Image (cartoon, rainbow over all chains, first blue to last red; front, side, top):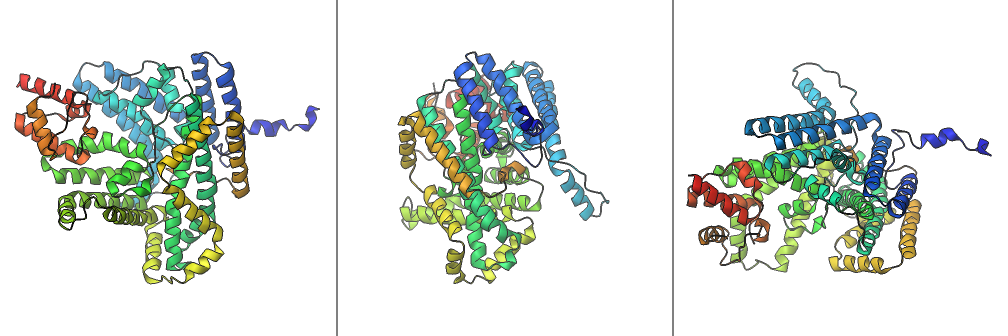
Length: 499
Length: 78
């Protein structure tokens, strides 16, 4: 009877394969997670058993997605745990500083080696400072996220805003935790570790919210983002000059929606999955396109990264330059946003992306006083009209940076803007709506859903919470069916896995 | 307890007429006290009390009660 089972194929499911990763939306993951959840919730009564199960499952998950790079994850975990605790215990301020800087240099050093070596070599080549062959370096998936997670521990111990954990086991779970290891949210040790003292209770409200988030996440990531990305955005950004300006503009609007749905959809699933296991991760998005200023946008977009940089980079820099007052803050903004840009990867497009955002913020900071005075004078302050135009302008300022962010080179970005401003051909819009009707409707739906009032979301969440388990399961099953219908042949990785 | 002097400096710097500031009040609860204005408040405190904060000392402060304590220690040591 067993002759017919191909054991090789079966074992293959558990082995790292670069071309067959294990993401949340794969059927194998859903199956494994269901098995995990059943054992975890129904049979494992002891907290220890739960923690060890999560550690092993998380390690397996990471190994399946990045192979032997899990050794690097171990390294990062041990370094930050031991150096962090050592610096906490150390009495001498100078030695504390030494240990802290050692940890930071190791963390950043690894990040730089894996992410930027070839970029730096290329700069040397272009400056004719030497001739270097690019090295064959594979990017360990999630390294930018888990390095920042690890650093939050060491940094807060150094500043003195958190107490250390002396349990290596608990710290390992914080570092390996599979829901947020590949693409965040970059949770803080100070918020995650205390949860291990509790009993991992899951309330009915948690389950309702989790189901709601998983439904939203699947729809955003696997229906909206993947469809409009593959069928429209990718085509235009590959050769912008082949399309009219109106199509380039639409592709830019579509990309804004794609990257939001891709990343926030993935985050929704991560938060939902964690909730089912009894853990609360931090929010990462809060309706970002409703922002009426760039500063507000960064309080709503990739919140776990922006607050990380705000607390650990911007604030210390701002303190350092405080004698320069507003200009000191402007310098801190430039340095921080250069870091935001470079964090995303080794490409000039990301550097320019950071420069645009820092310029927006610095200009807005320096002109704030005059703008407020002007709005007061013409009686616009606090009006809906002002807010509407501010939101519209903020959105388009971000759109410019999104084009630069998406383009594979600055030249491609330039081509997109060139087409929009020099080759618009507005009439093509109607042909586009007919030719790309599915993209059009999904895009429209995406933007409408984005601007739906929050209380409607909460009502749906309440309704799901109040529904019996089989209705919740049915909803998830229906969503998976929809995803399968829409999904293209190839699995689309989350864009942020590359960062 | 938050001293009247500290309260006055904060309200003055943020252009507020009145706001109930307690020990456990955090900066982001006070209207206008954002990450940009933060530096103005700190500079004003340094100037009025004639003290100098170290970067880490300020980063460690979690609420206005702790800020008051930090100021008091600074004044005692000076």
